[in-house]
Image (tube, rainbow, N blue to C red; front, side, top):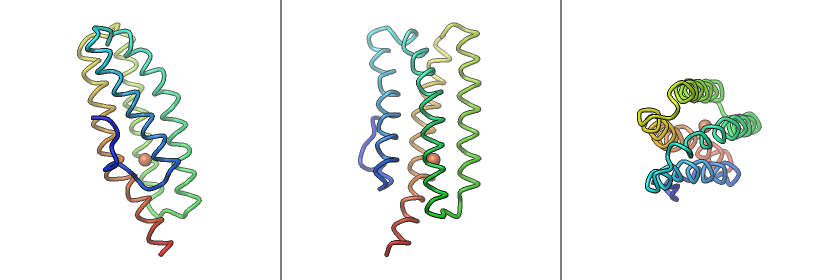
Length: 133
Ligand SMILES: [Fe+2]
């Protein structure tokens, strides 16, 4: 499932970065269909490592800027994801990209991201809109 408007947080900078994360994760399915999942997964993990850190940093800076009250809690959840990503990376390095790692990567990225964006990130947008009204 790619990014869709139902996942919009209503903050352009954040939505654009989410779109990119979903786009890259989607490419894993594409690679899987072509029998190239094993090659792509390494590339995806390298991308996610840099991009999620940057994205979380910007999202956290945004939360601080607007005075979002759940900042601390949200930041901890981001750190938890980075941790999971690192564990996955280790598994990947150890296994050379077997099917289990590919399935975990897929679950981690798509499921976590979908849940996080629709539950947590949406609250930032809601907060900002409430402030503005
Ligand atoms: Fe977030």
